[in-house]
Length: 106
Length: 281
Image 1 (tube, helix red, strand yellow):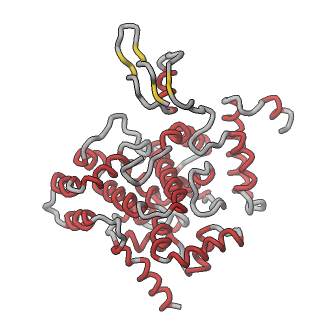
Image 2 (spheres, each protein chain N blue to C red):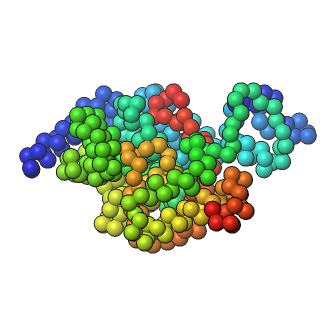
Image 3 (tube, rainbow over the protein chains, first blue to last red):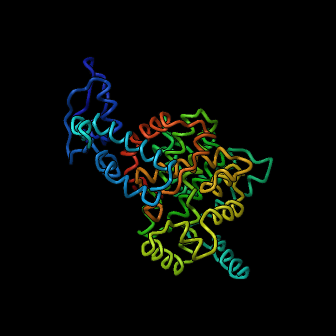
C-alpha cells in the first residue's frame, strides 16, 4: 500500500512523499503527528495483526499447545501465566478481546 | 561411535565448499589477523563484491537494528556496527542463501531471534547490542549447514520431529549424537568468530554452562524463546524449549521488562515482512 498523495504540514512542508510505501511504524508515526487521514492506493494494511498474522486472541489460544509437555513444571506454568496475562491485556487494549467476557471467567 | 562422530563432523565442516560463501569472507578473515589492516581496507574488500555489499547494507538497514538514518556505505556500517557484526552478516546471508524453501521459516525465526536479542540488550543497556543481534541471527546456523551437508539425515530427522513430537534438538541428538549447538561451536571455530559470539551460538540451549560470556548466551536463550512464543518463523519444530529461570535472574529481566521487550518487538514485526537474505526483497 503506497501513499497516493503527499502528506504536508499547513505551511506546505512535505512530511511524507507521494509513492511512499506505508508500513505499520510509518502509520504509527503519522498518527503521533496528529495526521487524521491520508489517501492511499493498493491493498489496505491490517493493523490488528503483525507479520505473523496472529492476533492476541489467537496467540492466547495457542499457548496451551505451545506449552504442552510442561504441565508438571511449576516454573514453566508461571511463564505461561505471564504470557496469558500479557496477550489478554494487549488483546483487550486492541479491542480484540472482550474485557467483560474475560472478567466473567473466560 | 567416535569414527561416526568424526565422519559427520568432517562432512558438516566441508562447509567451505558451499557455493554461496563469498571469497571475500576468507579475505576479511585474513585481514582480521593482520594487525596493520585498517577498517578502510576491510570495507574496500567487502565493497568489491557488489552483491554482497547490497545484502549486508540491506540487513544493516533492517528493523533488526533500527537505526534512525539510512546507512549507505559498507565503511559507515563497519564504523557503526564493528567488524564482528559485519562478518556475522556476511556469513548468515551467504549460508542462508542456499536454503531451500523448507528453510524459509528458519530464516524468519533467526531474524525474529536477532530482533529479540537487540531489544533485550537495549532494554538492559548492554554495550554493543548489535553484537547480540548478530549472534541471534546466527544462533541456528548449525541447522542450515547440517541440512545442506547431510540432506538424507535431515529428512529422517524431520520425520522423527513430526512422528514422535520431539524438539529439533532432541531429534538431532537421537539421530546424530549431537545437536546444532555443537555444530555452531565447530562453525564458530571454523570461521574464527570471536568468543562472545561463539558462546552465544554454542550455549543458547544451555546458557547456565557458558563460561566466558554467559550474558550473551542468556540473551540469545531468551531471544530464541521469545521468537518461538511469538511464532516468528519456525525453528524446525513447534515445541517450546524450556526457558531457564536462571537466565532471567542473571540478566535481571523481570516479567515487567520482558513485556516491554515484547511490546518493542511487536512494533517492528510488521516491518520485517519480506526481509530475505538475498538482495531482492
